[in-house]
Length: 207
Image (tube, rainbow, N blue to C red):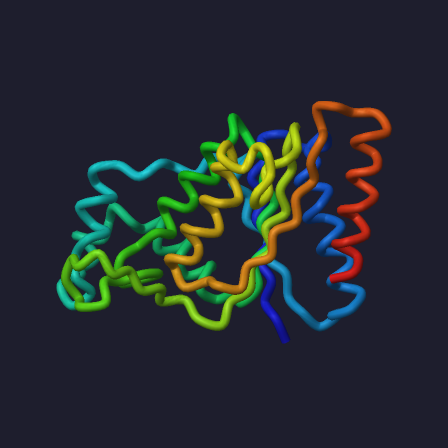
């Protein structure tokens, strides 16, 4: 039995295309895997606090030296990390904002990016060799974008700080099995966008 974590990052609700993708994914997955458990984490419509000085003071304390007092700055972060670790499949729905990701999603990632929790230095000391702690995880990134051509070797590849960043940062945590499905052409609308939706919806249904 899988534990699936659905993460929605759009600041839009009913008009969000990335939310439609995660909804379709969940409906499709449940039909094929009725015994799997689902959890939802909202990072677009609900505020995820950004890290601050108190967070930093707590996060970099060695596990053997942690106390309730010196960990007060990462209480919420600990909840998010615990939830993240407890799942083995992640479904991340996110739009592209200004060629990158929504600020809420960035704050969420900052809360998860914890030394000795989701990643570590190979030698145990700062050595530039990052090792992911999370193992045997699978992630689906379902992105929506206004334009097109952001894929590898495509015309706008150099402007894609959305899926390239997400694949990199979650890879640092140890998640190497990452599938990216992107719905493009929203800003064009009409038949072009409808054809894009049809194609991407079919891909999700075939998972």
